[in-house]
Image (cartoon, rainbow, N blue to C red; front, side):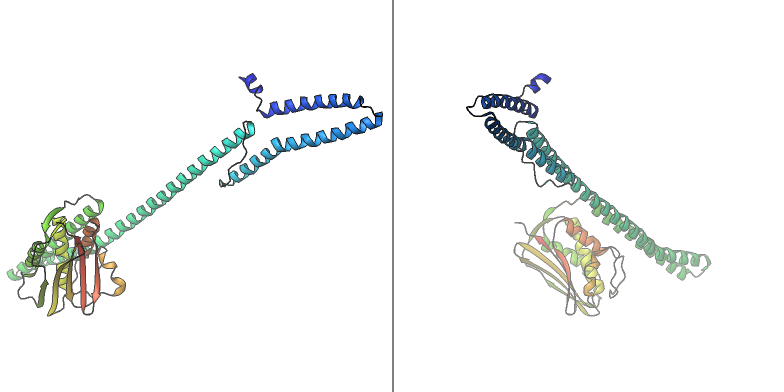
Length: 358
C-alpha cells in the first residue's frame, strides 16, 4: 500500500523527486553540450551560466506555482476557519496532497458551519424554553398569590360568622349567618371550578368537540335564560338578530360558556336604566356577535389587560373573580376566532366572529 502511494505520479513527493532528477540530468547534459560548443572555454562557461540561471528561474516559478501558492492558499483558508469564517472556501484544485487537503478543509468547513447553525438553532430553542419556563414559574407564583388573596376573604367571612354562630341564640340571625357562610362557600367552589376549567384549557387537557348548529337559536336560548330571570332589572334590553337560521361549526358547550361570561359581564356593568344590546349579523362569510352595555368605559391602556386572569377594572360596577374574560379569551383563541373589546361613546362593546358553514 505504501509503495503504491509512493509510485503515484500526482503526489507532491513524486513531483519533487522527478523534478530534481530531471533538473540534474539537464544540468549534466547542458554542461556537456556547453563544453562541446565551438567557442572558447570562457564563452562556453558564460553561455552555460546563463542557461543555468534561466533553469533556476524556471524551477523557482514551477515551485511557486505548484507548491508555494497552494500552501499559502491553504494557510489563508485555515486561518479564516480558525476565526469561524467559512465564507471563502479553498480554491486549490488537483489530484495531489494539496488538492485533497483543500477538499478536506472545505468539507470540514461545511460540516462545522452546519454544526454551528444547528447549535445556534438549539441555543435559540433552549433560550425560548428557558423563557417559557420562567414565565410559567411567574404565572404559577402569580396564580398562587391571587388564589391566596381570593380565598382569604371568603374564608375570613366564614370563620367570622362561624364564630358568631357559637354565641348567637337568635334563630333568625343564625339562619342569616348560615346563608352567608353557604354563599361564601359556593363562591369559593365556583372560583376553584373556574380555575380548573381555565387550567384544563391552557394545558390542553380539555379538547374541543366542534359540531354544526344554528347560532341564532342558540344565542336566543342562552340570552333568554340569562336575561329573563330578573324582569325587574333596571335596564333596557335590545336585540338585533337575523330572522333566519345561520349555522356554524364550533364547540357548542364552550361557546355557551363564552356567551354566558360576556352577557353576564355586560349585565353586571350596565348603568342604571342603561341599554344592554345584543347584535348578530353576517358579513364576508362570517357571523359577527357583539354585546354592548351602556355605562362606564374602560381606560384605553387597560383594554388588553382585561383578558388576563384576576384582572379587575376599577370602574367595574361589580367585583367578580376576574376569570370570566380570561376563559373567553382562551376558548376563542383555541379556535382561532377573532375577538376583542372597544369603548364606544357611552359604553363598552365586546365582540367575536365565527365562520359560517352551509
